Image 1 (cartoon, rainbow, N blue to C red):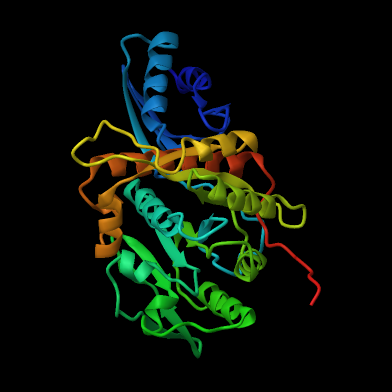
Image 2 (tube, rainbow, N blue to C red):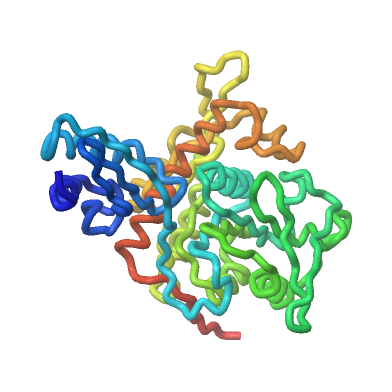
Length: 366
C-alpha cells in the first residue's frame, strides 16, 4: 500500500454536508502506513459534527475495497470549526461563528432554545458563548442559576473589560447580571443598542467556535445594531405551531431575507410542538396545532431543524437553573441534540457555499 493508493481510495468518500470528497477538502492529515496498518486523521468542520461515524465507516470500506481487504484501518478525528468571516475581525476577532436565535413574538421559548442550543453545541466539544441580548426581559440568569452573581472586570490598556460568567462549560453574559432583577430596564432604543454594543466590544469572549445570541422578540433596533456591529453567520428562527406565532415568524423570515440585510437562515425550530405527559411518554397531544412550524419551513424552503416537545421538565429545569441539556430527561436531550446536529451541518454548508459574512449597513429615516 502506498500513500497515493490510500488518498485515491479516500477521494471516493464524500463529506456529506459539503458534497465534496475528503481529499479535495484537505480533510485528511497525518497519514501513515506500516505494513497492513493504515492510520490517518479526519479534520472535521466542527467538534459537534454528527456525521463522523458515517465518514469513518465509509473511509474504512473504501480502503478495504479499493486498496487492501486485509488492511487494518485506524481513523482519528480532530476538528477545525469553519468560519465565513470576511470582515477585518476587529470585533469578536476570536469568534468563528455568530448565531442569532430569533422569534417574531415573545413567549415561544426562544430563550429556552438558545440556552439548550448553546449547551448541546458545547456537549459536542465546541467552545461556546451565550449572549443574552434581550435587554428588557433577560432570561439567562434564571435559566443558568446565576441570579445575583456579577461578572468580574479586568483592565486592558486602561479600559475596563468584562469577563463573562462560566456555567456548564459555556461563557455567559446578560444585562440581568449587571442590574438588580427587581429593577425594570427603562431605556430608549439608542441606549439599549449602546448596551448591546458594549456586550460585543467590552466583553472578553475569548476563543469561541460559536457565539449564540438570544435576541429579543420581534424585529427592531437591537437586531439591526447586532448585524451592523458583527458579521452574523446565520439565524435560527423559533416558533410554536399556532397561526398567531407563525404569522410573526414570517415577519422575522422577511426581515433577514431583505436585500439590505440578507443574513442566511440556518433553519427553523418548532417549539412546544406537542405535549407528552411523563406518565404517557408515547402519547402526543397537539395543543397548539400540528406541524405548523414544519409547514412554514416548507413554505419558505427553509431547513427544518426539528420539533421540541412541551414537557414539564423543560419548564422546571429553566426555572431551577438546570437547563434541559444538563438535566435527566432523555427525551428532551435527544430532541435538542437532533436540532443541533442539523444546525451544525447547515452552518458548515453555509460557510462553504454562501458568500462570506460581513456587517451590514442600513440607512433609516429618522
